[in-house]
Amino acid sequence: EPEVTQTPSHQVTQMGQEVILRCVPISNHLYFYWYRQILGQKVEFLVSFYNNEISEKSEIFDDQFSVERPDGSNFTLKIRSTKLEDSAMYFCASRVGGHQPQHFGDGTRLSIL
Amino acid sequence: AQSVTQPDIHITVSEGASLELRCNYSYGATPYLFWYVQSPGQGLQLLLKYFSGDTLVQGIKGFEAEFKRSQSSFNLRKPSVHWSDAAEYFCAVVPIQGAQKLVFGQGTRLTINP
Image (cartoon, rainbow over all chains, first blue to last red; front, side, top):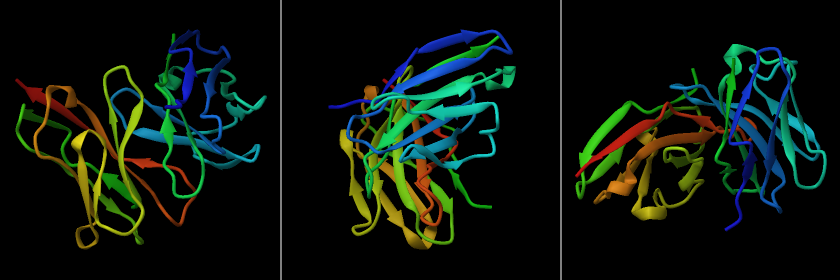
């Protein structure tokens, strides 16, 4: 069964550094998402992406965040200048469209030191 | 405020016992409803979904859920749990009026006693 793949599984970064989290969505999917889960808290929506543009973003997704689909397969989340509070598990998801659910990757655990 | 509530943070059941995990939502219209499971170190796996139609939906791994409009609930059930069902369970909704983002409940951690 096709899967959403996320790399790396764990990223450790110094505060203030840029980080890029990578995702390979399922190949025929058209809608892409990023979520995050701070330890002990809910999974929170960050951003959705369709047709090469952001379709919705949350208040968490400020100017420090950006997303890109640089080619036909990758979907990336960039945090320009990381803060301690960015430490979380980041999940990528994709969806084919219509009344179909989102499929999630295994997540990237981001630790900011 | 619009939200998804899972009242039970942690539930412990014995292997072979029945299970019910509660989920309530507060949205004006009936949203799309989902249950996801997260095993340790794993991502979120879809158990089942409800968009419309039959209010009792069957999922993978022997799980089912029942949508009750009058109670704004979408409770997850399994008649007999297995040790491998130990995991975190998340109820999630897509509010129809909004975009396709998922809004998650807090999660319920399920522990299985042998």
